[in-house]
Image 1 (tube, helix red, strand yellow):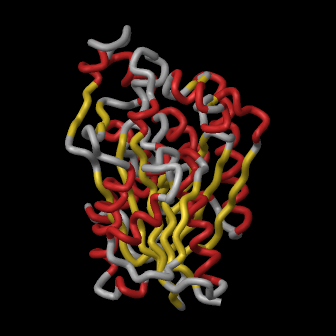
Image 2 (cartoon, rainbow, N blue to C red):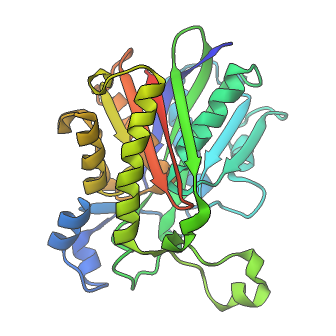
Length: 323
């Protein structure tokens, strides 16, 4: 079977930047409190009328340009998002049209909250390794600001908007070495958007759904779960902690990220961290961080990367990649 190798990365952030100082004017919070508890100093917010598909398109074009001129061969598009432009058609189908890709490609969205990009990467990897696709565009894109209650200080300080993408291609070189996905729906009440079309027309008209989160409980589960995920990934590949060159974690909270880095025994400079400037961009956070570290030269070809995420569902997953 072919290997799935990352051929190019890309990302996009909306122009508007919202600082912690702005949030101090909206809710009872402070820049000091937000920084201490989350590591977030600012986040990007999509403009009025700027949709998930708009953000995804920009990241996709950047990844396609980085991957090289053979973009006509893209035959699979997967978008990971919890904030799609429409219920249907999928954001991925919208991108097929926008990017001028040929009809007949495979295109669909994946909804796995903050773990969505890792889930989508796993799916694309399986398509390529089994010959179902040869070049895949995998995108994480979110306009999370649209599902926030801006009077809820426990959630509105955390999230931002953005998009990141990779082009995967079939190769005889080692690429995605392993992926590990999990879910547990027994604790959905800890983190969710308790609203949707299943509640009927009147409920939809009554209010717009927003994020509900019991942060302290989510934090405890995330730290414990990600620790076990690191062990699982290393064991599956016969590796020691010191073998990993870079940790590229979901950018949820600096304390969760630091705990995972300590589990690996990695120094802080070997963890890609964008949370201070991006906040939590859900499914977009890992490809955003990956693209930044590739483009500024930190991540080099041949290095071993560990991507990991934890999100609502609960869902969690990892990917070990030879970049």
